[in-house]
Image (cartoon, rainbow, N blue to C red; front, side, top):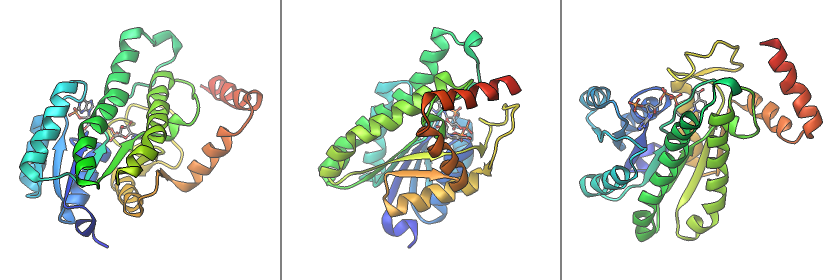
Length: 253
Ligand SMILES: NC(=O)c1ccc[n+]([C@@H]2O[C@H](COP(=O)([O-])OP(=O)(O)OC[C@H]3O[C@@H](n4cnc5c(N)ncnc54)[C@H](OP(=O)(O)O)[C@@H]3O)[C@@H](O)[C@H]2O)c1
């Protein structure tokens, strides 16, 4: 089945680079009318010029009012939204010594509030039409606390919990919510990492896996499979064993 048969319209945040950009291009190539948001209006303009079914809606997702105005604007311009992917995110690999309250709030504002405000902005319209699909891009880093990922991992764990929590109510209204938990993806976000990134994949590959998962409508879309299996196993380890492993990682650094 082509994406166009499932979704006529889609909104993607964080569409100026990496996974969001790849998702916008893949959906647009399959005939979906895509509203692309991010702060970099220049990058969005290039994307819209290259793909006639992509329209640019520049936005800072930490501005909750602008987010809800943009949702309304998209619905006015494109008609009802069939798919909304809240993918905008930020990440800095920092240890405890470099953590500061403002930095943590900033990551929370983009990754958590930027996505949940989006969910709250699109759900009334979808509820009215009794259909629609929402995807929240979290991460495998949201499964358990990982070294150098205290702020980022916490935002992703919160997103997973939030989505689990609202799933039944949305489902009752005919809306499907999914959480996307990628492993390492080759994007500007991971380019700054100076540690080995097992099973890293391209953004195009991650985008194809995300869309394939969304087509099935399942709640969790997690990849790559082998890395997911390892981290799911670690998720059920008792703390003594889990901390023995993460402490060993720290010693290696
Ligand atoms: N790369 C990975 O290994 C990986 C793994 C798991 C999960 N993820 C998640 O996947 C998502 C996409 O990440 P990526 O790897 O593709 O990173 P990326 O290339 O750095 O893209 C991040 C996107 O978010 C946008 N963004 C950041 N702050 C924003 C703000 N305040 N308002 C609006 N847009 C904002 C950026 O655009 P502007 O700067 O133009 O605003 C950009 O389009 C993120 O949620 C990330 O946490 C990534």
